[in-house]
Image (tube, rainbow, N blue to C red):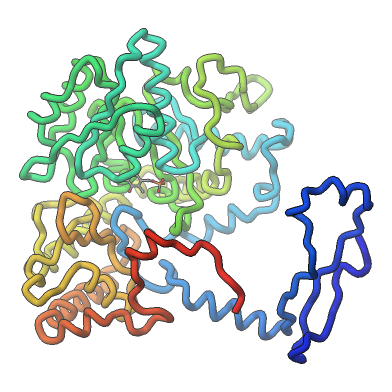
Length: 483
Ligand SMILES: *Cc1c(COP(=O)(O)O)cnc(C)c1O
């Protein structure tokens, strides 16, 4: 490395700046680099002392909201507290530093954990064939739809191109269908918020590939006719896919395979604890019936007399969807979470998630309208029907919650409820936290009547107030400049 890699120079303004010099690269090699990649001038970086640097990052970290500093009832996302012991396990050097190309003989412990997690997920879902390959729930959906496509192709039924999706579904469902080259067709919800059976049946036929259902749904409702629905889909030769993002409400209580599901994904980062948000990190393993095993991505993990190894010999496999076989850090955390809770603990986590959501629902349903007001699962959806008279929208309540120290709930989703506010407390919150949240939600409702402008102005405690979200979507500025 060249000794003048780091050059210091006083800038004209008198402030010291750091200049990054050139690397000691042979001139012949430099000539081979594309012109556009070569720096013409030294990069000017601010030079600051350690204390300034530390303060800069600590200040930034204080602006960051997370589950570790406030209640985060973001429905659909399952922002549960993720135990620190999981992080410690994921940080163990022997695990952290392994590489997918390492010889299997040297990573037997990791492969054993991988295989055991597959077995646990098979146990929780009742679906025996598992791959932890997909990087997220959305990729799990795509993966399963490709598996279904390969299955129908092998059966000579490649005319099956339709994926039926309820209107309360997450946007990733139709997106995955489109990317898989299939056609998404919407199935209506009935007045009870559940799948409209007559509408579903009228759309089932020879072209049906998959019925994709989220159960419990994004309305926080358990699909009580799920067995009948699965039977109807099977009767026309289709497969049932369950979006398992809400598995945390039923894990250890009901197994999707038992009510007729053929394939599903599990969001390890939601249900089985990995800190997430802002799009990552994640893992979306899929679990499928035995008949579909041969189409799962390669490599598969196999155990034989010599121990564990990765097997790339899978002629019917759909192949790989991403660079590496799985998101190891997330796998490890999920394994720790499941081992720590055990069979009983997994069930109790689900029961407490449901209990907490129902507690909030019955404490808030007189103040905020709950369109499907009955026993809910892990989350419930309310809206601003009673607050509309004051000119209040869901976004106003969400922004006011920020001022009171909360991460807002999910708003404007699911689309089947107008002005939706979707609240998911998770099992990890105690009664005191829930009571404080209830009190603040009731306070906000009072403010809607007394001082609606206070809500329209919120948030006032954050570095920036209301953003022009429409403009942010249409005219995004995806770079920043050092100011
Ligand atoms: C989160 C979620 C997804 C997508 O999962 P990712 O892991 O974020 O890709 C799909 N469906 C539902 C219902 C979800 O809540």
